[in-house]
Length: 356
Ligand code: GYE
Image 1 (cartoon, rainbow, N blue to C red):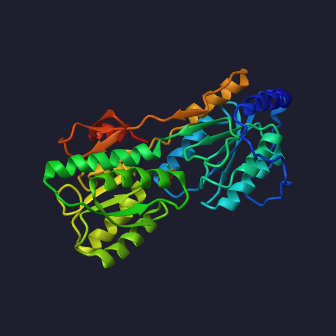
Image 2 (cartoon, rainbow, N blue to C red):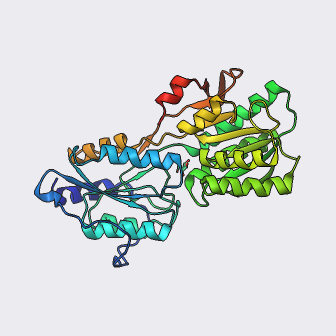
Image 3 (cartoon, rainbow, N blue to C red):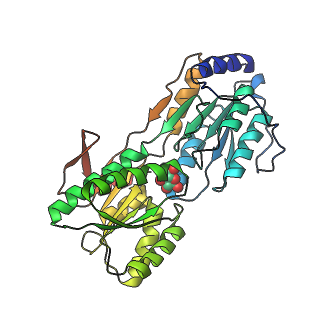
């Protein structure tokens, strides 16, 4: 599609989302050094659509699945030139990558924001350049200057975790909850939402959250935090909430080394988020009691957004991914979250095999 038409469409779409106090373009895009290839194919001359994707990094199984989903959908075969930048969990590098995409004049920019704030200036630069921005996965909370967001409701995931734990504890006759939380990366909306949702139920039920520290969504981070928790809270905790599977794998290593028994036959209830293949395998074996899915396969929905824009339409501002809640034991068929009944799914080999 010709840049001018796209630019016009973008401006029209933006009119509805502009808010008071937004300044104009102030900064000149700096010469960045984020590693990315020079654009080789000018899409204005052909049908190829050039997309710049500023990905968070490569910290987890979830991230690997997300990257693969984008690379599969936005392939050369499908008519795309995908400029992929792994931002290595570095916010400055991510802003620089987006500015480089603007300089290159890509047709679309996809951002999975490492942190949820600090975006308005650079998104204004994208807007001024007439390049539509699509946000995936984590949210941007201090700017509305993007066309669409495709992702998950992280607070709902945290609430579901809390509601399930309440039902599970009641079934098992556990009267006191003493929980340790291993949070995700600081400032990420996935961390903020999961923390907020779980805390809401914990406060309502009068549970004790002994500690809540970041494991940075990595296996090493999860292991380190768990090792220090075991030193500080030995014998005092009966629940460990890891905000992603990789942290749970690290926490399991730390507990195993210290002789702490976790999982369905253990003394500590272990809960995780993401529900990628390896996470579900541990649910099936009973090492992880429950795993709250976060679906990383956003790319097909992003492609829908792009197709809608290409044909002159207005895409949805927000697209929510569908997700499921997984458990080992068949004792709680469903939970109520946000006033809605949601099923708890017992993991089978077929489910593991079908997962990303
Ligand atoms: O849970 C974690 C990843 O943003 C939802 O980031 C994503 C999170 C996911 O590193 O594994």
